[in-house]
Image 1: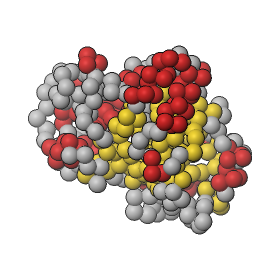
Image 2: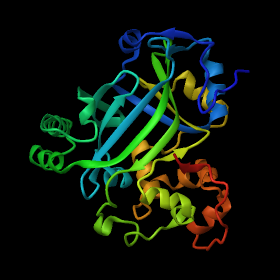
Image 3: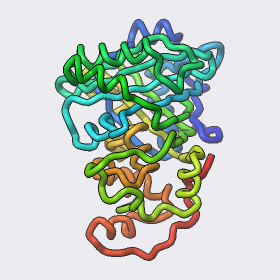
Amino acid sequence: MTRTTAGSVSTKHLTTTTLAELNSAAGLLTRVDRKYLVPLKSAQDLVDRLAPHAQVLAIDERRRFSYASTYFDTPELDAFMLTARKRRRRFKVRTRTYLDSGLCFLEVKTCGARGTTVKRRMGYHADDASRLTGPGRAFVTACLASTGVTGSAAAHQVAAVLRPVLATTYQRTTLHLPRAEARATIDTALTWQRLGPAPFTGASAATSPGTPTGPQALRPSHLAEAINDGEPVAVADIAVVETKNPATPSPADRALWDAGHRPTRISKYATGMALLHPELPANKWYRTLTHELADLFGTDRSSLESISTGHSSSHPLTNTAVSAA
């Protein structure tokens, strides 16, 4: 059995593919995505099982790559709220910087028909990754309007007020499954960092601003302090696995199902915002916060679930695996 390296998965036993080969065979800018939150060991088991059929992306002998993303939203958090309210047409705006190469892109993701995700992107200067330039806002406007998320005038208004609200970093391993025309990414060493002040959400918040509820109320005091101080919050020993398929489930999905894992509601943006801002509605990600991420809060399911049924819990949070990075 292959051993994981510290905070990552090992792919030394896989054959490699180049970025050009990956893009030509499985670019999948229009795709069906499934996400899984699994222990690091389970992610390694997945790699080992797929090894006879999978290739790993390698660039300059690197097989694992460092990413940084900055997410943008309106002062009222329209992008977050559309997702929280399960609107069919929704959007996400971010810059993504490939730290190993210095390349940067501005990306706009929209949810289209039948649950498919469409991503459009433009080249961007890495120095501008934490802000939206004039051309960047024009690109966002065009993407929102052309995909039908909103009308042209409203798209312009949304793009004009977007501001940075969340930063993430992580390390990614990309697998290509040629026979299935699919791919999978495995993200490890994830961090979330709040940018700027707490958002104004008006009546849309789960309760009055600054009043934690549900699992949010059980955050350790040191974690809350780190968040309020704008420090990165690191998630240890957990991998985010995302399968990207044209339509049907891929061998990666089936391997995860066989191991007892099921797709979960996790978005680096929305879940991160729900964690960092306890005043926001988090019902859509309640199971993720109270099950897959329960150990990260240093508590068990029963104490978290008791809150959802109206019972109080006096269990202190200790030995949490979520820490200031």
